[in-house]
Amino acid sequence: MAAVTGSAISMTSTSCSFKQNQALTRISKFNSVSLSINGKCFPSLGLRSAPSRFRVSCAAKPETVNKVCEIVRKQLALPVDSAVTGESKFAALGADSLDTVEIVMGLEEEFGISVEEESAQSITTVQDAADLIEKLIEKKGA
Amino acid sequence: MFSFLRQSTFTMKVHCFERKFCVSSSSLVPLPLPSRMETHFWYILPDEVKSSSLLNQYLDLLSPCEKENVFRMHGDRLKKRAILARALVRTTIARYQINSEVSPRSLKFRKNIHGKPEVEWQLDDDWRPPPLHFNISHTSSLIACGVTMDSLIGIDVEEKQRTIKNNILSFAQRYFSHHEVELLTSISDTEVQRQEFLKLWTLKEAYVKALGRGFSGAPFKTFTIRYGGAISGNVNSEASQIVVESCDDSTSHTSNWEFTLLELSSHYAAICTEKDNNAFEGGTLFLWNKII
Image (cartoon, rainbow over all chains, first blue to last red; front, side, top):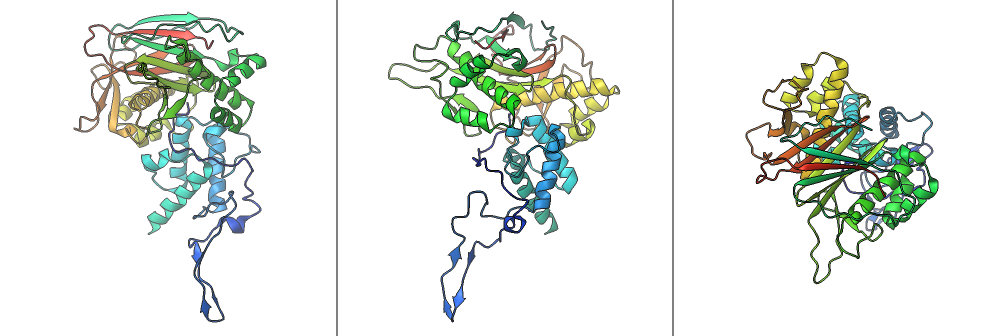
């Protein structure tokens, strides 16, 4: 039963090519840069309308995303070649609430983190999980 | 056919009906709204729906948003399940003699602030919507919809044969209450332990869904579900009550809840509804295996 609540994030169905664009997925923390040309300072430019495939925020490392995909595949008993990417929604892959909690527990053990219920509730995609993992790892190290 | 083991607070009468599927979508036999003392439990097994034209008729009942959701599902089995889940909710609610405007297709739904689905009634000047509550649950092989009148409801269904990928006791230690961990630890037979784990899971899920606050609104660790009086009592006692209690001194988990645990042939189904404290006897549970 898809009992996991959380905001519905609408994702396009284009498969995100994380594999090919590894460099691009690591988007800088700073979303503005100021340019200085010939001594003149230009006002900071924000990252303009990024393609909808990429989030303008700290995206998790591809290795983290891949690890999450692996854990999800194992939990849902999906074939190795099944399409599981960062954009994949747990519910769309057939995960019910027990699966999601099992996945979260698997992630906690794999990455040595602890996920609060509020955070767990907001995870709807593989990318959400990977981003949260990295955030928690960072916090742990701080 | 199925046998059931019921564990509920009072003597709950259970009536079960099994029907074949009707191809004609106009054969939605109307029913009066449930009384305050009744819980209606509608379910279907996706494997029993074999006709693709019937499936298309069901798909046709869905809203554009629901259809989009169906197409986002990976693979035919999941798409079919998504169609049937929405079709079951729509046909079930429309079945009650609400008013002439309500049909499976016309119903609108929304989510409350915690994400719990509810009906968005089309209000009219002279008409007040009935206090009808519903809750859905599905596993790969069963989809269920519980309906009550004037009472919060939460349901959860699980396949009896479902395997837990993590270690059960580790999982329980992480998410369940201390008493529940004790109960599970005291069971030496791993198969019985797995079954009792699943029953506890479905009961806890049903409770949280009835509360409608979402997973984080009532973290599993903060309340205990237990049978009867003794904590590590005889889990197979047919006469035992199922109760929910707070783990700490807070009164955030009250005693207003009635639990029923059904054991269908391949599934556990937990139903949690608000107790009618004025009632001397438990209510009646009606089960239907049909969609249209």
